[in-house]
Length: 336
Image (cartoon, rainbow, N blue to C red; front, side):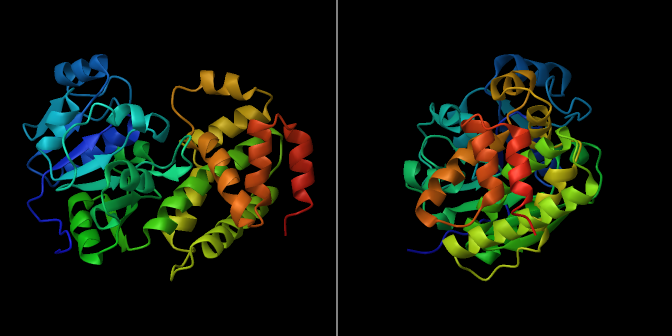
């Protein structure tokens, strides 16, 4: 069987209408003559159709173009595309894809989801492989460091296109490269995807510590240790030739930990300031992927046994009602 190749003329579609999905539609429209966009929420779909902007996210981004095909029918969008970009929150991915009856065997599926599919303790690529039988040769990743809000402002940003076949990664990269988006390439699907999961956990830790009043000196130590912890987990669970100092690993960790746009940092900040987990979730209008990631990594690491004091501290605060001040104080003794 010949390996799957992304063609230059391949038509793209985005599944998901959140801030990152909206940003990806904007990016793809810079290069493509046909972009499908599945919007599950009827109110949002009508808002985009009527006003050519997403009424919930990135409202300054306008879509005045005939190249965009909007639909509330998932099967219609998937059937008309060759490259399917998933941008729905991982917590709702099963539900979002539930109406799908169109087979994916001739499609290339790209995950732009930075999280874990709950309950199964699997990444999005692993979920698509298991649930839909799609080989990893037909699954790719698009990762940061890149916040949707800065894409909307067209500030220079960097993405990494990841596929098992480097030529597919390059072709995918051509579809997302713009005057304000530079693209790197990788074949490390496992490492890239788990790095996006881990960095959300570490951003929650940073937010908690900021909420507790820790300063920049400590944050530098915390994030440095988080980078080492990430490298240790990837090395011990899936050894490969990778440089975790590259922007797709370290850069994504840094921007998620420091940025004002980071929902995981914001979620952690609320926990550090005394919110309960449930109260913080209700207060936020967007999903903090790190909440689900903390449980997933904890469950995976029960078998792997990697030393992960920061991830474990976040897990205990979110799932075992550990007191943030006491937990972080104990954590400070384990950092170097």
